[in-house]
Length: 199
Image (cartoon, rainbow, N blue to C red; front, side, top):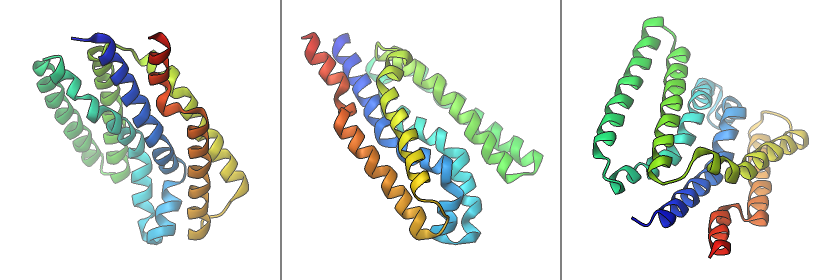
């Protein structure tokens, strides 16, 4: 019933989850196949490709899963049931289409793409339930997104190669730079600071 508190909690949770998840899933998109091949062996390169295709969906799932309780808080159980049924139907259809085509990569790609799009729709509904908007979230999460890109570019410029020590070191450099930027600009506490200023 306290809309302002629900908005602040929704925005703080979303930005925090995006800030934590962005570097990991962005790294899988950029360097997933090399990382899997370096750590587990060349036979695992396809698993890295699958991780690359599914990483955007997993990032949204990381954010959407905790926010899904907003529908229960707002007593929108009918929408929860509808979303669950549609999600199952969309994902099964994507997998069956991939099987029908006969390509494992197309199958995983279709699953990742359809689930990603469906998660965007679900997030929009969750934001409405939390009395906020995607635009407000994007403004607050733009700093971490830019930081991930800058850290990745810097690490790739400094450390090149696909050997395991180089892949691991590159990931550590990206994470270290990112943590420093997150701490320096306090992105995890931006909504809380704005709320304090307003009070």
